[in-house]
Each structure stands twice: as structure tokens, then as C-alpha cells.
Length: 319
Image 1 (cartoon, one colour):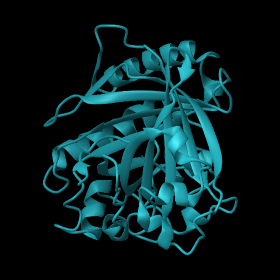
Image 2 (cartoon, one colour):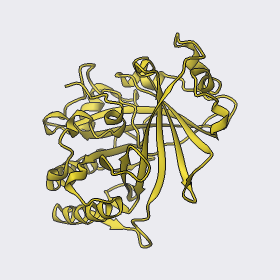
Image 3 (cartoon, one colour):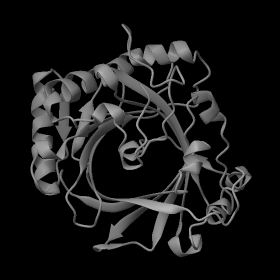
Image 4 (tube, rainbow, N blue to C red):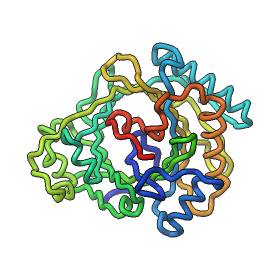
């Protein structure tokens, strides 16, 4: 039996809220209100966390990851204060850097994505070297949030955990965009995944073998090297301080990041009936990150809605 938890995820499974034509656009009311209008209670009762995310342009900050994180963090704290928000910093080593790799597996024509699935392996660095174990995460990536929530994602044979959350990013026209994601994860020795065929993953999630693809379908890897810091918290009313993450992705080990992302979120909050928390979370993204620091945004950021994996896999959102 999978243990269900809710927490922030760095790589989203994109599910359009409101229309199959593209992300839900923030109208006169806040995005969460529009989402609730599209999916009235209790349709999203399973969702009890939100993550807000944004992509920064590496050309607008310092060269090395260490210098870039220090620069961005200083600007974020200053912009938050100017806009009337509280951001706190960890007392010890706030810019301690973590290293890992994120690998996304699909067929050359991204058939798994087309069928509504995303497979990711996260491998942490231990003592300067990649670990021999990794965390496999399989997500549902359907346009309809209800279809995503109905996807089983049942893991067999190993201990697993499941997550489900609402995500918010900036999209076309400077408007907020939302999507719901659901995923299941398990940790395993990478050697147990063999040649990384569909069958190797289907052994632990049998529903993958019902997609009409042969079990020996070879999956190719699209890989990002990650530098990450967790320097502090955004303080929002009605919930615990929201952990902040900043991450830089490169195409090779010790390479130069081609993007930086900023994210924060809250969990264990019922999606329906918590308007003050949702409003403050959206306002921080709009006023501080996309407002005061709008000049730092990635030039094509609106194509990805804040999603690093969308950019990595070249899967822009629809207008």
C-alpha cells in the first residue's frame, strides 16, 4: 500500500486547468477562484498543497551557481521587503548547495508523454559522486485534472509514496496559469532497472504495460545536472512558513546553468476554503517575483509556465 504524502515537486506533470486549448488564464478573480469554478468541491479534494514557480534568466545574474544564488537571493529578499512581504533566512548555511541529476525517460517521439505519462529518475550526489540508487517518479500528465486524479499510478513490489498538488506559474500575457499534478515515487538501485526499457519500469508500475507499447521498448534519457539551494521561507498568513528552493540546471556536470528556477509552496492545506492563503501565495509570485524582479525573467519563460521539464523536453504550453 502506497503511503500518501503531499509536498512540492520540482518537475511538473502539466495538466491544464479549465481548457484543453491551454492554461487557465487569470481573469478578474484570482487563479485559485477560477480553478474552483472549473472544478467545484469536492472534485479536487485530493489536492492539499500548492507550489509556485518561476524561471530566471542566467544572463541576468552572476556566472557561477554559487554567485548566482547569492545574487538572486539578495534581490529576492530586497524585492519582498519593498513589496511588503516577509521572507526569512535560515540561520545556518542558507546557501548550502545540493547536487543531483534529473533524467526523463521516453521514446524518441515522446510517446509516453502523448499517452499521459512522465518518468523521471533523480540521483543525488554523495561525496561528490552520483549515488548508485535513485528515486523513480512516474507522473500523470493529462490536460484534464480529473483524468489526472483518476490515473492509478499504483506501484508494486517496493515501498512507494504518492503526491498530488496544484501548481502556479506565469504564462502568456503576464497571466497566472495553473495545473494539477499527481505522481508516485519509489527508491531503487539503478542496476535493478536494467536497460531502462518500458518493461523495466512496468515491473514496478504494471499499468505502463497496458499503453500499447512493447515491454522491450527502449526509453532514451534526457538529462539535467542540478544545483540547488534552500535558503529560507516565504511567510504567508494561515500556514507554516513556505520553504523556498532555487535550482540551476546544466547540460553537463560542472557546466554553466541554462536556467534558474525559484519555487515555494505550502502543504496540508485544504484546497477549498482557504482563500487568504491562496491569495497571498499568488500575490507574492505576481508582485515580487514577476513584478519587482520582472527584469530577471527568462525571455521565453511564458512558453513553459514556470516548468523546467517543459523547457528541457521542448514541450511548450498552448496559448
